[in-house]
View 1 (cartoon, helix red, strand yellow):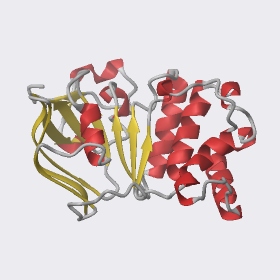
View 2 (cartoon, rainbow, N blue to C red):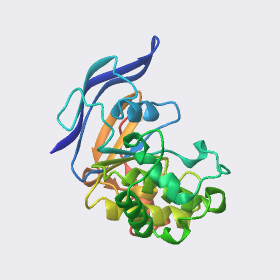
View 3 (cartoon, helix red, strand yellow):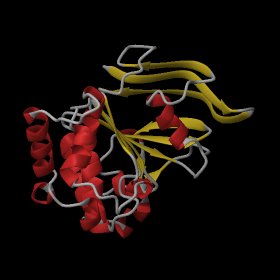
View 4 (cartoon, rainbow, N blue to C red):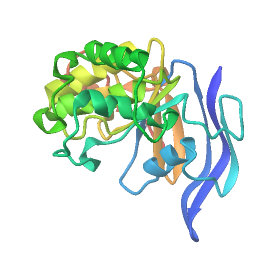
Length: 242
């Protein structure tokens, strides 16, 4: 089942082409890594999927709908570096923020909302910190909090923008292990600069630099330099010209 499909999609900022003739499909339970240089169009690609931008040319189909605008089935996890860490907000309240669009001006969360938020925080191994302020959490805990907020609406697709950019390697692996477990029920799409690290988790790699080349991981060959890395990882060697 194709959940996302791009057909001959291009996007221009003013007269400058950012993405050109993009074609790909994402199927249920795919785990896709988007890689490419800074300024190559990775963030623009995410914004097109999230309907924050409209294509200059071509067709985008989400869940079979060419006019899909709802975010209820799409969970989005930004980089935590874009947030103010010292804002006086408790972890549980941050997770519940996703429910604000369904509430009145006066914030009142249902019992079910609170129970679901607590359940997700426990699943992500940060349940014991639910009443702490964000400023009291580590970078890895804050990143899990963002994932929790995206999961509270039970999305079918989870989109992450460099989810491990500000954490150390041990936390990075822990987060990817969590995403691998979530991938049993959720389709995952993430932007990363470290394809050698995520290659043991993903099944597709999208190389983006104005153009997009989509690769299935099974079609890519192991590099002889694999021994430099953990044996459970794959080095990716391919010729896409990007």
